[in-house]
Image (cartoon, rainbow, N blue to C red; front, side, top):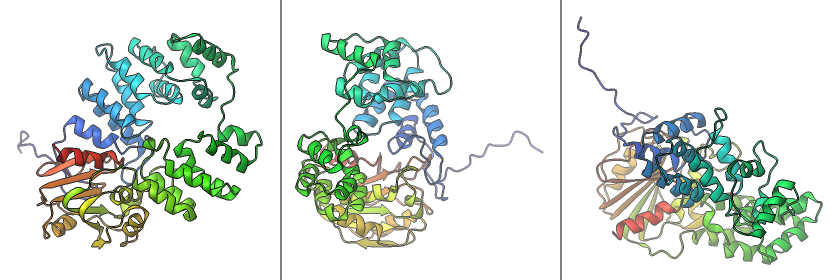
Amino acid sequence: MRLNARARMSPVRTHEGAPAFPHLTPIQQLRRSVLSCLLWESEFYEDGRTIAQRIEETAAKVPTSELRNLAVEARTRFNLRHVPLLLLKALVARGAGDPWTGDTVAAVIKRPDELAELLALYWKDGKRPLSAQMKRGLAKAFRKFDAYQLAKYNRDSAIKLRDVMFLVHPKPDNDRQAETWRQLVDGTLPAPDTWEVALSGGADKRETFERLLREGKLGYLALLRNLRNMAQAGVDERLVRQAILARKGADRVLPFRYIAAARAVPQWEPWIDTALLEAIGEAEPLPGKTVVLVDVSGSMNARLSAKSDLTRMDAAAALASIIRADQLAVVTFSYNVVQVPPRRGMAGIDAIIRSQNHGGTYLGQAVAAANKTPHDRLIVITDEQSHDRVPDPIARHAYMINVASNRNGVGYGGRWVHLDGFSEQVLRFIAEYERG
């Protein structure tokens, strides 16, 4: 018997068995794990803890400059909240060798509650001293927030905002800020004028929402999430319509959020639909003929989070519904390959989701079908977990948009341009990429 036999490498495959791309670089692996990740939330094939562990392990292998850039990109362009903080934790773990760590921490933190959330992540496995760069970044971030923002997110959590302030000792920019911080410490910050505070104090729902709408004090995500409450309270529809169409603060709202809003208040869907179509602005249509393949397999029916009714399929359909092209063909795939009307907005989302039964993932069959028809551009929106081998595309431009965080995927190498995430930023990238 020979002991020193030639080693055999097991082929890399997707969860459904198709050959996957075997040679991802650390940054490629990190991007596919991060940019569609709602931290700690389980997906169809992998649980949230496994994904988070892989992110931390992979982040340790990525050059510091790439890790910094990805943390900022995930928060500021892809509008993810918690996974960028996990990247900051990994960045801080690199030690004091990177002088830009503090600036990266400050750039990623966009809300006061993220100050405490980052500390909670940092201490998840036991308390330890804060590095100088961590302190500098938290202190710099702390100075960004005014009294209203601090009061709004000053929650009775295990780690409070005042705890963060005592730990990092930020220096106020002026006397007014110093007074705000003194009130934060003393617990005397004026209550913020939010719908939560007003309603918890017994205020009339209709009057409260109408006043906040008139004064422009309701954030866009809060607006979308409260549309059902407003409808039930009889809020002036004219005010609601104006707020939806104004899209104040909508740059931080992911496209699939519009789907949840439209399902909650179908009578207001026309306004929500108009707002959704403006999600990518006034971008020029992609030239030539574009074929969009949308994954409607069973795994895409996995919920985005335990508390959400929205799915990966909703996210994929929302992206597909806002693509603009001179000539557009929209095709769904599962067991079958089905062409649907190339409608935009909510009508397009409905056509995609209802196009066929949601079963297996035969992405190879779908790409092969697309290859039979001349086209300039192929865009695939999927979780990349195919049953069958995926052939090379014939299109001049071919993009694989991954909307899940699974370890392995099929859309690398050859002629594919691989993108991760369910933000409309992936569509902006396509237009910019083709402009050179």
